[in-house]
Image 1 (tube, one colour):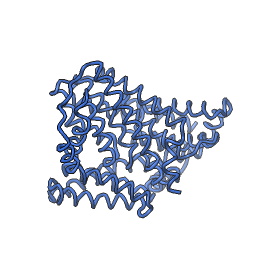
Image 2 (cartoon, one colour):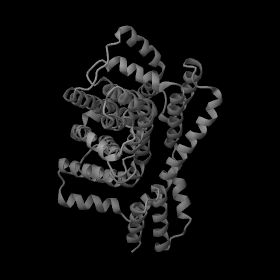
Image 3 (cartoon, helix red, strand yellow):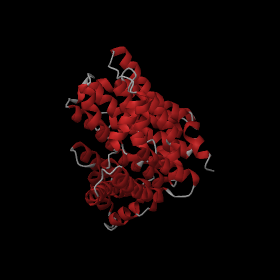
Image 4 (tube, one colour):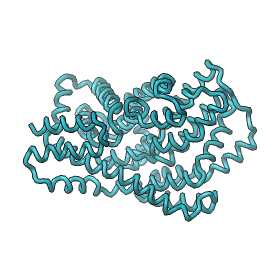
Length: 424
């Protein structure tokens, strides 16, 4: 009975449009009251959910990304990307994808990528003669690369849930992220050739060199993050702190576009963003504790394994479940609720936990561009000032591309596990 109340309250909250964090908290409260459990369980489990050392990475990387973005990083990355690929057919579309790949190594979140890159690239592409729907679609699709290429907020969440090394998670996402970005660039080029989109003039090696020098300190931040963890000199949490200090130095004293007077406001905004994520983590931990206490993970694993224990079919089923959930639920909430049950299932058929974590995150990133709750889809459609319909139609080729990459990452473990194996 209590479990039915939990499910009905949760579904009702989603239907009426309550924030996911509130929905999780209210449905958990309804369960605890109906089960006759003490209410003190709620604050205890919320505190236990956020009292995890590795979660300190989240405010650190959010702050570092905001500081770098406020220090002129976006413009320099776009200029460098345009010098590299802007001369090809559909060059601004390719620049858009390349910028997202480079920016993703700094922000760690898809929404920040979509808003920052889209705010500059979508109006610029429209002025250059690109259709508005294509401009919004390529921006939304490419923004999903951000949380795959390290650093990645969803991967920090996964590490805190499963005990998998966050450092290894970051490194495991590098090759899938590059593969996803390259696949989207190929898709963009094919569409551009077929529709005869504009191309920019080659700006010369001198401009390529100048733009690289301009973007060097921004790009070096990714090398700092990845290099520090590969060598083992710093933990992910320490890396986040180092990255924040680095961002202040580069923005204020190298690029000189970050007034020190703005730093307190950036810190405040970053704290608010971090608090929203951590509140979601806390309430979802209560919900997840209820599922575990009701043995839902074991029930799901047992139900699937009673049908098939074929590893390849189980991977396919997991992908279908995550793709469906990603269409209706915010990424972090979906991870906290579903990751542990599905990890139990994956380990039951011999899937490496690190491999599973990467394709699970990739799965839910695709959900950021699918209706009805695709956040990046809404952000880019809003910037382009278009209804969702045309943007969704223009997005279809990219969704097909993303699904192909997802299948490759799901069925070829080495794409995820080879680089982390070098850390052993």
